[in-house]
Length: 628
Image 1 (cartoon, rainbow, N blue to C red):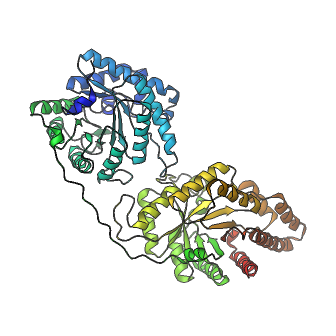
Image 2: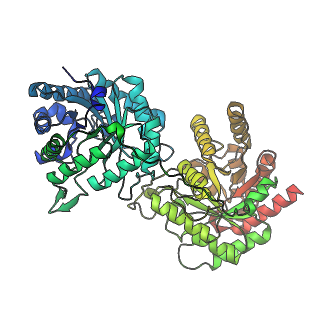
Image 3: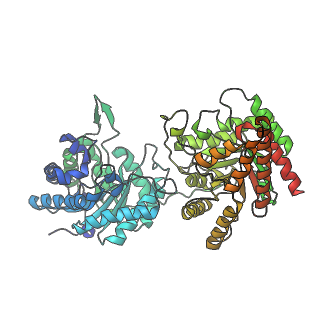
């Protein structure tokens, strides 16, 4: 008869198993293989690992289903076998346990999805819940005694997994997170915060696994116990930090060391102990021997002091940026985009910025590696423009190509240089630029970065919650497409950016104001008026060839036929006159567009092509006359 898990938790310290991947690799299975598929293709090797752990004294066996979710299986083309793999994993473990004639609990093992969740990734929480629910349903249908959600680094993902488990299965749920060397999750959360979140998620047992060795996890267990002392805890450390020796991954902690720490974990309040990466049946046997040789403890009598309360201090608040003040006052703002130089010379850049400032531009927007082409760093250009042209700038800040360390370091550098306006955007993929082979990864999506700035840096802490000394005072913009092909998706993205705290929006260039206004009206009808300022993208046209290129080859740009016809008419003139006429006609068209959008937009965002800042200056002159 299978023992009752909840009753056992109140009477003894349970011993779980150790690493599955380590043991499968030791049996000759390469790490590049899908370990979960072995439940179907090589069940004997999986069964042998289970048998060794049961003989070593494990009371809880985790199924070989750690990566058996739709996202990870899809990488191997196995998503259609999800149910079969999970159910085979349970049946294997159950068969081995029955053959041992020992009281062993079968835990359905659920690992992370292997994708980044919103707001720091593209996968929405509901989609993650659905993926977890698939695996939970398969495991529970096969008859597990409990569920273990382990090695989770993202608390959003942890909550989604527990919710899916509770909504789709009646079995007890363990949820366990993993930490980096600095004692925080990979997304910067502390053990105390993790304990609070996991306790509130509805899990029956919470804890920590993987991470580093026993010493680190003992400290983390104590911190989690302080924050959520009413919970039951589990802890499964790695066999120390791994290192590569002669092409093999080696772990330094030996079995006897683990035996000693089994007693320390129990004394610290762990209800379940075991091992993770690098541990073997020998480690588990040593823990079994230590637990059996020492007198049992009443875990309910272990007391921990309350978690310390951190006192917040007030910091001096900087005044809003000039851009923020102008938008708040209702001024019709003119922003102009400038590209950084390709080399060291900044003379033309400064001359162009000075021209625009003299013409009356309110702010210069500095693009960052537009079209993924190598250029001077945008925040350095912002500093030069602000100092030498005496005009405020907005720093374009793409998330693509930056990890969390660089994102935050660059933000601090920008703030230190006096840059306060930032425009957060995904950025162009490197595949279209000068270096298509360059790394194209990112740790955070635009809405996540907006949230990091507004709820982190602007409150005085970094992403991990560590103080940065004083709050930043960034005024944060985001991208908006007023003429999208997929309106529903654009509205969804807009709502996410608003929720994250965006202060203003810059749009892609528009040539159909009626279509743009219709988008805003639809958004207002469904969600209420968009109360954040919108600066509408204005792109001066130069020639019929320029128009055709934009219309046919630039994603997101659609130029109505009447405008294309007007620009085509300039071709009939002589080449020299056609060029002049094309520029003049382009300015006239954009002036007409500004006239049409001025009733509902709070400004324009001019994108002068070919570094023709003189054309932008003429546009500014035309806007001044229009507003008089």
